[in-house]
Every structure is written in structure tokens, then in C-alpha cells.
Length: 438
Image (tube, rainbow, N blue to C red; front, side):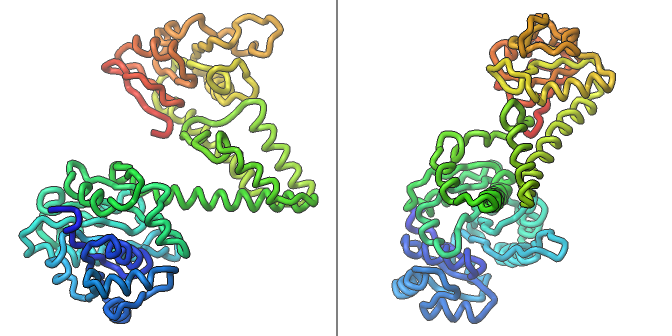
């Protein structure tokens, strides 16, 4: 079936559904909007938009006039007339903040009922914002239970999160920052159909597992919220001393190498060093002196301490008593030990009675007056990473480097490796590997 022949039913003619319907019809696909709300069905059927979004009314009017866009409340007929269904019901918050997936479940049950008597292979694509595990725990059971069919065999399934901002939704549809397809294991056909439906967009989709796709939307929105709150916090601090915060943030955003970039965006261990901890403390204290609250900066310190605690718990949970640390400086390719989280981890392990072996090529074993010597940890220092690996029951990887990679290849069976930096090396057979946040 050619890409211009896909017929799409869109369940939910709200914000996401209506925009998707208008854009797909504009791209030449036959679209059926499905909604129990007769007002929305009537609006679309008459060529009007059920919501206000700049440019959407024209898309819907044109789609209806061209015979590419229709609307109905008959979900069984919509399934029978189409090849692929977008599921766009709302997922509101409950009073306790949890996600209400009842509308998602209802729509999936309706689609399942319609699929029960459909002989052709049909594809179901979730578009609602849903938490990790929702497809597995809600969507699939509802579809399979109502249809009596098997996902990946009798019907297709994928998750295609939307990143549409109100007011710029059509522009976002055609010029997205990213396109994400969450693929159900082995279902190439549904992903290919999504590629076809997005052929007019010049952005290469990221095809990732469904559970990863489910959390991407939340990660995006929470990051946006953090950025807004951070900018506001800096604005509050600036105003307290008569500084134009827009001038400051314009300069901050002009740095696309470190500030607005992929830099520092790899999950891993806690930050440290001579700058970040010191400057956070200084700006937080400055806020107190100006009587300006700094909850974002305060939470940043708390989050860093939590990451250190997670690393300690992984070591503690390993059950090992002889612990090797590969790395001691605050990051790779430096001899700076100032406020290194690895030093803090070593000190805590030492205080809890663990037997330590430590190697870092940039840390001195002998006191020669330099900054890269710690007297209370000097007795635990070893002359090579191989020596640390041979002595340890559990190895904490805190520094990336060829020496670390080579040494780990000689780890004996039964040794536990706790990786804080995601070192790119395949572990020997029998070695128990665990990453800090992967």
C-alpha cells in the first residue's frame, strides 16, 4: 500500500486530535475524526474547527471540501474504513496528582470491539501523554481483551508522542524539534506506516522502545518547566539588585556549546569540582541576603546529594566488603580533587568499614605538596587499575579511560561492577554489571 493511500481514524477530536486530523488531511491522507461529542462531530463535518488554533480552521475547511476529512461517533465504522488509528483521548490529573487513564482504556476497548470482526491487519497508535508502563498495563490488555486478538500478530501497535504547543501547533507539526516513534517489539509495519504519514516533515524520527517513548514527553515538559522556573529565579535575584535579567539570560543563551546544548545532559553521577558547588552556595547565600527565595537552586543541591546516596546504596546492596574505586578526581582528565563526589563516596565507604582499593592515575600516593594528595585515603591507593580489580569483590567505575576499560576486561567471575559513568566496554562472562541510572 503506497504512502498516500493510508486511511487514518483519529479517536478524540480535541486539541491533539483536531490538529493531527487537519495536518494529515493537508498532506493528502483520508482522515476520519471520531468523537462521542456531537458538537465536535458537527463542527468538523461542516468544515469548522472544534477548537481555536491559528491556521487550523482553514486546514479543516479545506480537508472537508476535498473529501479527505470526515467526522463520526461510530467508532466501529471508523475502524472498518481505515487502516491505522490514532488514539488521542485526554489524560487529566486526579486530585492526588496521578494520571487518569480511564479515557485511554475506554477508547482502546472501543477499538478492540471494532477489531474483533475486522479481518484486515489494523494498526493502533497511541498519541496521548501517558506514563511509562501505560501501554503495557492499560492499552494492550484493553485492546487484546476486547478484540480477542494478539498485539504484534493480529494488529499493530506503536506510541507516537506529540510535541505540539498551543498557539504554534501547526508550525510544530511540520517543524518539530524531534519526532519519536515508540516501537512494539518486532512490529516494523506500524513504524513504517508512521514514517509514511510523516514523510512531509524533514526531521528524521527516533525509533525507540515504547517505554522509552512514553517518558520522553514527560522529560521534555518537566525540563521546560525547570528552565522556566530557573530563569524566573535568576530574574528574581537580578531584580533584587537592579540588574536586567533579560540581558543576563540573552548572554547565557548565546552559549550554544555548553549552556543551550547537549553538554551536561547525560545522566550519571553527582557533580563536583571547584566551581559548581562553590558557586551554587554563593548564589543561594546571595539570595538569602537579598531576601529572595531560591527553591530551584536549593533543590539542585538536594538532587546532587541524592545521586551520591544512590551510588552508596548500590555498593551497599551488592553485599561486597572489598570495594575497588577506579577514579577519585571529580571528573575524567583532571587531577582536581576539590569537592569530588568520588572522594565523598570513598570517605563514606571507609566510615562504614568497607575495605577499599583505589586507583586514579592523576592522584598522588605520596605527599609532595600538591593538591592531588589526600592523606587519609593514601593508604588505599594502588599502583594500577589491574591491582584494584584483582583485590575487589565490587568495583565502582568513576572515571572513564582506556586503562579502566582494559582492567575491567580482566575482572573475575562473580565480581560486581557498579558503573557511574557508563564506560563503553563489554564485561567478561560472569561479571555482574549495574549502571547507576541505566
